[in-house]
Image 1: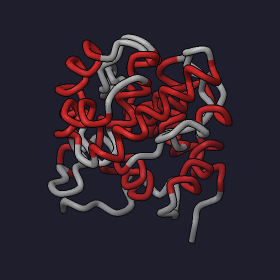
Image 2: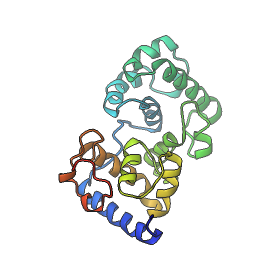
Image 3: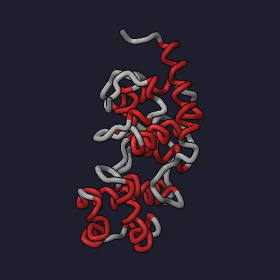
Image 4: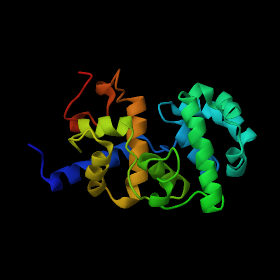
Length: 216
């Protein structure tokens, strides 16, 4: 039986406090210096690791430092630069179309509204939340990636497998000011301890709060 919302919220507060102490330096691991770079990197991160994206973006940003230059890129040349991130043809198409949209509709500036961001090629709600939270410090929603999805289920903060539903389950459990950081904390925990293939439950600071330990 699902616990009452107040009990779940109290547990959520404890979970956040523990993770915040455990990972005081948690942050977005996609290297970027401005909203343009973060948007491009986030589009490239689909079905790809942040580490791989960070290996590709220095050359990409050197060759295409602005939306205007990216909008004018030849697909074949862009594909060569981003080839190792996977799905490179589709990603190149999305990047060029996205750049064209930003230049023509938003004067070359990344929009700061969810409804405008999700209209850009290659941008869904998760990507938009990444941009708003990390480029503009706007806590519009919660980024739900594979780590957040898995761990929030293990901690019984949600019973859903749908990212949009998970986000809506998590939102009332945490203060708006913590939404962006919550994703970082869960992602860092997923990468360092609560790994899907090799969970280190004996070293987990949340072990006593976990309802479905995998590594025991």
